Length: 237
Image (tube, rainbow, N blue to C red; front, side, top):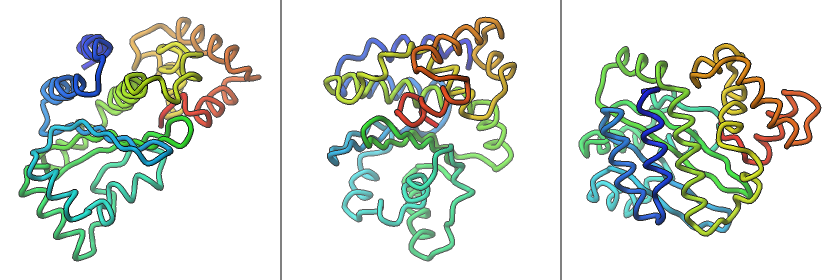
């Protein structure tokens, strides 16, 4: 995936309209070799935007029945800051079990992994991947691709905000994409060696990006830089 990620990011950067993100999402699904990819954003005024690979029948069913009010993924991620494996959520209620059964019948998949995104000025978004797989297979998939999925979520969210007219992204331009990457890795709890390896750069280069980001954010140390980047919506975890 590391060798293919730059190609995806390059394709993503060429998108100039929200509609043009759709083939990018389809391409990402194929790249990951999974059933579905979903990006859904709600800004501070309640305006929504989604790009996804679910069938139109399932999307219409979900909206008609207002399933967001009982969907454990939506409800659970809204209260969390870190990625969520669907199997860790509470599916014990009758209504949620019935909902999950409908989702599986609609081809959503029995496994899922969602990244909550809290952007600037109250924006909230979800980036989700789902698939039909056994527990062990899915655990390996998410463990191996966790860092990539979080970075992908960040890039898609940033691109969507840029396309929508630059709303809420002025602060983001103060950090380069690579500076955001290194702070994201640190915010995820990785140490410098792990983070540098995940980004395929040397520890020296990693430290250079960290120091550059720290200077731009006016932070006294790395911990403060990460905290400030998260609080201002520059880093998504």
